[in-house]
Image (cartoon, rainbow, N blue to C red; front, side):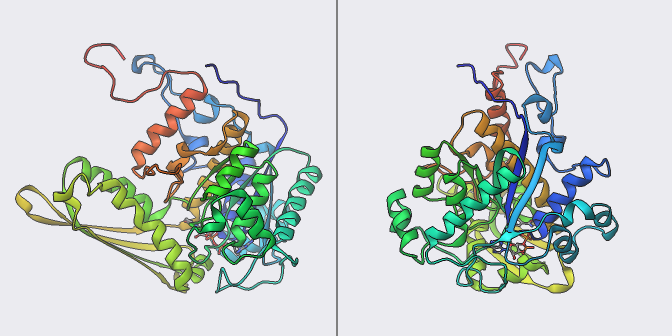
Amino acid sequence: MKIEIEKPEGKLGILLPGIGAVATTFIAGVLAVRKGLSTPIGSYTQMGHIRVGKRTEGKNPRINEFVPLANLNDIVFGGWDIFKDNAYEAAMKAGVLDKQLLTELKAEMSAITPMKAVFDRNYVHNLSGVNVKKADSKMDLAVALMKDISDFKAKNNCSRLVMVWCASTEVYIEESKVHQSLDAFEDALLDNNPAIAPSMIYAYAAIKSGVPFANGAPNLSCDFPAMTELAKKMEVPICGKDFKTGQTLMKTIVAPGLKARNLGVEGWFSTNILGNRDGEVLDDPESFKTKEVSKLGSLQNIFEPEINPDLYNDLYHKIRINYYPPRGDNKESWDNIDIFGWLGYKMQIKINFLCRDSILAAPIVLDLALLLDLAKRSGMSGIQEWMSFFFKTPQAAEGLKPIHDLFRQLMKLENTLRHLKNEDLITHLGLDYYEDK
Ligand SMILES: NC(=O)c1ccc[n+]([C@@H]2O[C@H](COP(=O)([O-])OP(=O)(O)OC[C@H]3O[C@@H](n4cnc5c(N)ncnc54)[C@H](O)[C@@H]3O)[C@@H](O)[C@H]2O)c1
């Protein structure tokens, strides 16, 4: 079946709940690239290449030349925050980027002012702000967000929109009855049910408006049956959860290698210090729990102790996040990995990653926005598992285990793009010894 992809004509509006460190680093980066001041390093869609055809053909186009993606010059930014700071002020406070660069972008960034947020301190204990909507019910709040979305589209003359959640991590919420069907969820919105967090209201408003939604935090947001039902009904692609950056990125790079060599792992201790607002929010045990659950899943999934009990059954995985203001956004993480090899002899690996959280997350926001828009124009809807590459806890269809291994995720991502372009899939499992593949 030949796939037809609609052309990316007109403007693409990228809507961001949460105009904090990640969102402003993303916006500033796109503006800087547009002005020729910088290079979009770390972005799969802008810097990545894909092999097409046989190895001998030497065809390796850039991703943004291979599939029809929105041009960076056609992007318009919008968003919501509980603080009134415009994107320039928020970026200055976040302290991720140099003041000199931000000064060069001041005019465009100052024009991006946050719309009033849907927020409730019961779901993010360590923050309070004034730029917040008031309404009688959660359904009324969803309707108000839908109005924001359609007003933004009209005012900015956008042909398409996408939404990427860049707001804070909410307290841990387990899936319950109200999340199981769209009817139950809509009743619960009308009843102000406490099982519905603000991020779910944004996701609902986006999907109901036909706008693709990506979830950059570990919140449930759109990861439950009611929301996937809505996404299918509205023919909208969705994906999540939690941008894969920093320590988890390293884990999903290193762990597949250890497993490939059949090395055992008995302990993996991970600790972090970070001092940005995200760190402050995660200092609350209930928000930390949401993050912890998101971070814990990757090793279990990669090592598959149920298949490899001798190597991974006793793996003790511990994660700590410590709020330490002097570090700001420049997080430092330490991993101590206790491994064992031939005849059970023990060894240790230490990883000390001095990273910059938002510098790693910003290109992911761009890639998610552009690829979700591509998915929508290609007629794809529901959970986009091929975008697992970008997430710590990839959302997968019910009954399916998500894929965490970065290299398997990349293969799935590349093959989906080849499929969209009606090219042969490349599995690297081919018959190279028998044919010239
Ligand atoms: N930086 C990374 O590497 C990384 C990686 C994975 C996930 N994340 C997640 O991305 C999110 C953003 O991270 P950040 O460093 O930019 O945090 P941040 O605290 O700088 O920004 C979040 C912003 O969201 C706003 N906010 C909170 N609740 C809101 C709501 N309901 N509606 C609108 N705005 C709201 C806050 O006021 C704040 O300005 C966090 O959830 C974080 O856990 C970040």
